[in-house]
Image (cartoon, rainbow, N blue to C red; front, side, top):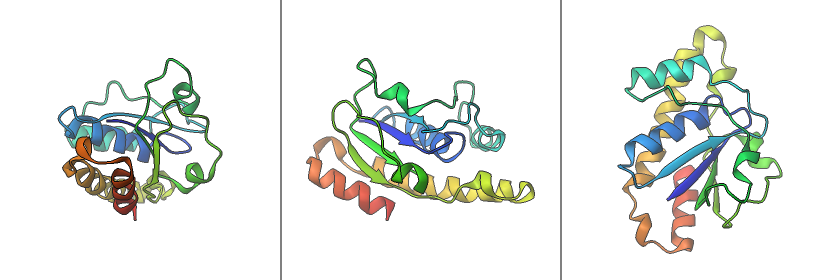
Length: 156
């Protein structure tokens, strides 16, 4: 399954979920992340946390969602927003008409600097739990309607 994770800045929450799905799904999920107004860099606390959890961090990047709306972009099966701003924005056309779901998580980068390590841990835990629920599904065998309902239920 190909999944695009969207957040406005693409520096924290979307990066965390991309890494979790990409590296914990045993190849069943290919994940990318992007932002409507990408920060242009991955938040240093995202890199520190993912490194601490054993994820590779050398290939992380903050990129625009426009990169995935081209004719040569991977065709997505699902698009998941992780911030309210991106969920409410007018999205580009995604080839393949992917399922859409919202898995809202508070922005850990918006926390005061001294609180960011804990805020990032909280966001990571929430996203890890949701990713684990998705990975546990037999999504390869599910109908589009059942998969869409499951994606929405996981994000609720």
